[in-house]
Length: 223
Length: 223
Picture 1 (cartoon, chains in turn yellow, red):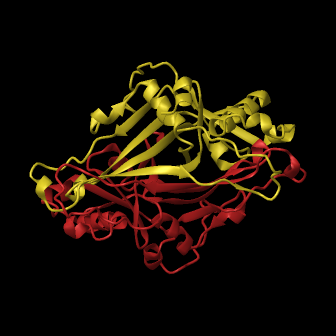
Picture 2 (cartoon, each protein chain N blue to C red; picture 1 turned 90 degrees about the vertical axis):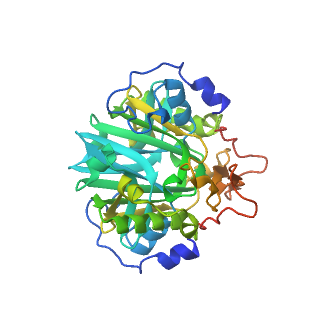
Picture 3 (cartoon, chains in turn blue, orange; picture 1 turned 30 degrees about the vertical axis):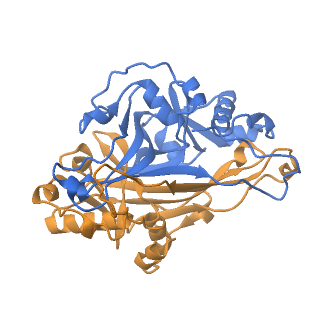
């Protein structure tokens, strides 16, 4: 968890786990405190928004960001995703992979990860000033300090963008962060066992043809 | 696309795009040919399975893998995810991020990515031999050659694991792989513009306490 994410994390509150988000299987991996949930969301650039449309579930990957007690995403006004999620039940999940876990049997291959699942109702931000403030929060969540450098938003742009959110009051986190859990007796099986770290890394920024000399890329928020 | 993924890719067939998976917004980004869809799935270790349960959509991240015309995932027998997806409409999405795209206005910040959305019906693999063959395909999709090194599966393990799949006959891919798309006139705005590569990388394998000397970690399949 980065320092900035820590600063932004809501004070830890233990939410009552609803039946729908309580971890039933391997409950030790479940977490319902907001500080854990917020930290995982704040470390995620992307998530998946699930909704139903004409009886068919959809899972669409998208940018997500958090402000206080809300988890946000955005889409084009008039898109099916927006029409299908306003006032409707939605689920947003995020998933960060930390390590691959290799045991000596197929069953004990696993992954160390941090995930959050949020259930709730999709809300559309309608006030143009609030739309702009939310998009500023998105840009700043990715590239601190960048908003002030950008060409200001136009009225038309504010109207084109649908900013959506779900409240964070029904959510759970799931974390696996242990080593190999082989069955007793399997440890001596002659296959390699252990973990392999997985990380998302950024490469060297590639400026387009119009960047004046001396203008440098933004620092990305550490995650 | 890795060589092995290319070998495993089904011969390119242009699927008729159903209304449910046809890309409406920015249709240039849409792809409906199986070779494109298969390559993105084969490059993905993880996906998100969406389903509905008691009127609530869920989006759960999980391992996914492909064999021929099927996209597979697995879960514990008796889990809610399995009960809710057998014979039910599901959606599985995968999402690979390649670059962050930074324009001079908020609206022209974007992401270069490859994604696939599959719609269909969840099927449970019931034949124990087929369960084992599918899990072998999963392990081999991650760690080529590893299956033969593992302690063989037990009958109990074959019964504990629910292997699920959806047919790949209603699917679409979406790809953004271009540069900054600033509005005319914005190019000279004095903010940095360009792309920042994003990659998932593996770290140095960390053996557990039981690995005999000379036993090396598996090579991971290139993606």
